[in-house]
Length: 284
Ligand code: 2YJ
Picture 1 (cartoon, protein in one colour):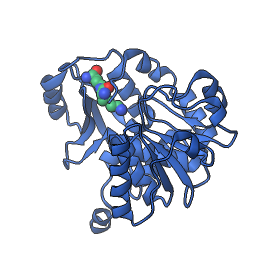
Picture 2 (cartoon, rainbow, N blue to C red):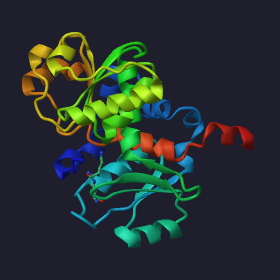
Picture 3 (cartoon, rainbow, N blue to C red):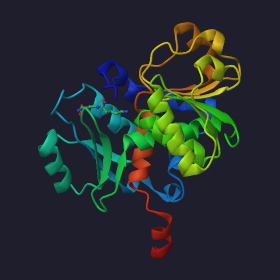
């Protein structure tokens, strides 16, 4: 997993409006709406103002990324949550959160990024949330993905979860990974679980000749060239760095969903407060 760097996050608090306008232009839905749609039944009735979220800086491992906690808090506040950054990092922050009547904590070390509901122990991890959020955004941008082929690049953690979300949404994933063994393992796992033919073993060029929807979950640079893209190509790319060269980026920008933190974090926040449907029903 790529570790975020300060330059990728410091501007997030000042650019959330712009970010949201861009997302709306591309998908017709706001950050909040995409997150709620991604989480599903139950998320729509959450009133974010009712929840207090502590962002805990994590100094262990490679340490604090300047601007990371501020960016996460800004996203939570933008979505309407009541959010603060704990004064202390690590265990000190956790103690503050528990003592401060906090409903959920959100924190990242070098390997994990998760929100944890302190009231009911629910955990929302960034990997699953990112996959769900980007599949939802791609689907809205494309006017639905049911029965459409989607090139899935990268059979890593986000790619694996996204592949499942694509199958659940009725799309037909075409799997590509530089590591052909990972590609095959993912395709065969999906075949078993969803009972559908999953294509793999093709070159990127062959796939891009006919597939216009791309989910790029790989950390590969310059994977896709400008002449492999058309005016119809649409891309959801949670992977960092972005797999397009400058020329390709120019073509795809109006139909590209890509950010370092916003969408995954928004889905985590709604997910961690959403109860399963049967539980909502029982409580009424
Ligand atoms: O609290 C801090 O400032 C740091 N400990 C944040 C560390 C951020 N972690 C990462 O960048 C990891 N690669 C996991 C993030 C996954 C985002 N998709």
